Image (cartoon, rainbow, N blue to C red; front, side, top):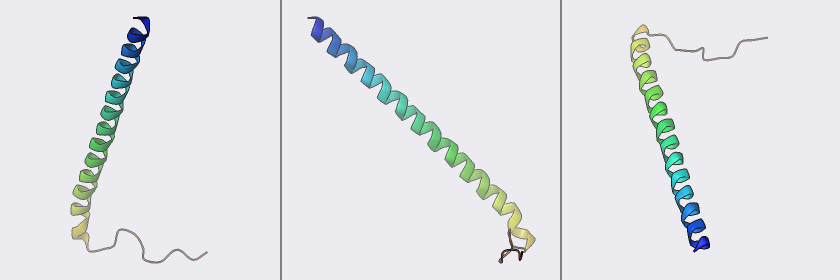
Length: 61
């Protein structure tokens, strides 16, 4: 009976850990989506200036 309880405890712990990792991945994914959306929004406002966002060529030393 003791081994069965230990196995149940381990199983529950693995399930909790997997759920936590899923939540972390979901949070990271939503943050990335928010950053991407903010970048697109900012790019729309800069696009009307007619100038490139950065120079085409690197600076000469």
